[in-house]
Length: 99
Image 1 (cartoon, one colour):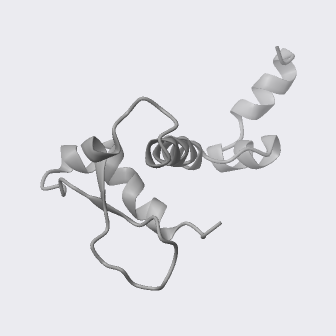
Image 2 (tube, one colour):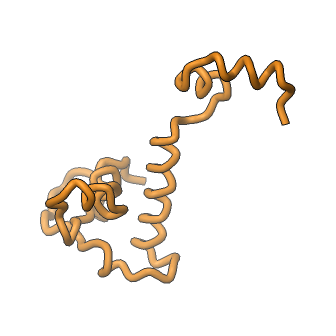
């Protein structure tokens, strides 16, 4: 546990400064990373979740990017649905660099 003086010092800093001092990414980036890891495991059948229940392969066969392009089966029509795992991860997955 951090000494009281160090802890009180961090409380005076804004969120961005605390992240920078501790050398950690933001909560948003950490959550996105976890989502992408789970997506990877679903795509490559590394977990006991069925790919077909979450995603479809993209119908476009363009030459850009990588060959594992996903398409969201149930496009979001409401704000609540837009926060679901499948909605959050598809665009980030498509935008990732090919490995």
